[in-house]
Image (cartoon, rainbow over all chains, first blue to last red; front, side, top):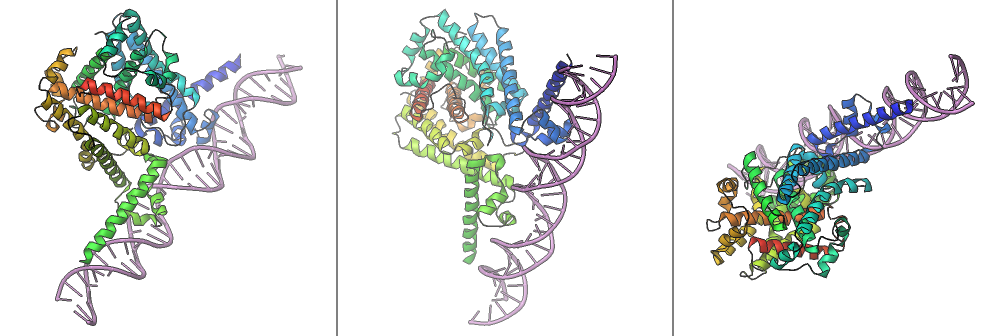
Length: 239
Length: 239
DNA sequence: TGTACATCAGTGAACGCGCGTTCACTGATGTAC
DNA sequence: TGTACATCAGTGAACGCGCGTTCACTGATGTAC
């Protein structure tokens, strides 16, 4: 079936386009991504790219999807390498996987978690890959709740303000992604941990540790590690 | 002295340029900011702008400085309106001031705390205004430490991992900005609170609450408020 | 108070560049009978 | 197995656009004597 050959060639060239675009993203950022420049590097005439990609925005979408998938894969792999019962270890593995990936591909990270690209509206197809990382966190919360049924109660007792009905309503959209066995208190802590993780990585990548944290890579890593250990403990993931 | 008149006229037109640029930023983002478009809107020919601003990058710098100053002012004002002894209240006022400002000027917030602008290197002049917000936080920590000399000890006792010498070394650059009376433990918690605050605001602004937190403004605010209350308590700021 | 000179804001044209997207086309590769 | 037709990748030219920055210039406004 020679049609399959064509399909494969098509997929391969599309892949090459995305790969070159990814490299350009790494040097010029999303705003500087240009179909013409990608075409040039591939030795094609610029209009030829339109056989594979409908528009610049669609190329951006492909990059975003690829980015979420790559990050998701990195995180899943790192977490899977830790014994399932070591919840704190799984959390830390997740954190470092996110950070390592972000440091290795800063512009791609910025595309996913930085400022929205002006004029670009993320289509539906980017939503599902984005949930891959959060699914890892959801599993952690689920396991923590299952292992210690009283965990949420103890955490809530320590907290100064309870998760009331209004707050629960605010978190309603995310509930379908978390099993019923996970109480609201844990969902809130999970969301806090999630924002803390990405907030810390973003601060480091976007230059806000300037005159705050020593630029030495080992020290940066150490600070990050300590922060995330504390967030993990606060979230109820036993170290 | 007519030279002063000229100086004033100069300052006024420079101000108008920055103001128009700020508005353009609000619709097109930093990458779309164009000297020519600004000139057009002011009824000048594009080259005339160069009498006031040396380059596009310098205009960006002016915008960044203006942004940090405006945010700093908003935060300082909000915090000053709360009685000094109400540490938790001051923290919450600070948080809401940051969020309200960011919601009102999303592109400016993105310029300050989002992805770095590719090819743009922030000059020294942007560093000092950026510290204005953090100074507020530093004062909060200082007051908390002064009021309760044992606070850091108690917090450290709860924590699973202490701030050891390595971690302290990582935080060394920020130490000059915080009085000696504030122990490392509190500095770490302050940094955590800081990243949590901006991480949460960024997630909301950059679209990561999609399918997570209800889009209703009142519910969003409620969730933010609850999160920040908990962060404040965790940081040792009495509610 | 008047005059010669210096400073400065703003003009208009130009340089050289890159971009996204469309369109009619060529020629190779597949498909149906 | 051979032929007529359809599909598809890639070409090259063009449209229409905007950008940052430079430069020689005009004319008004200030300054020094």
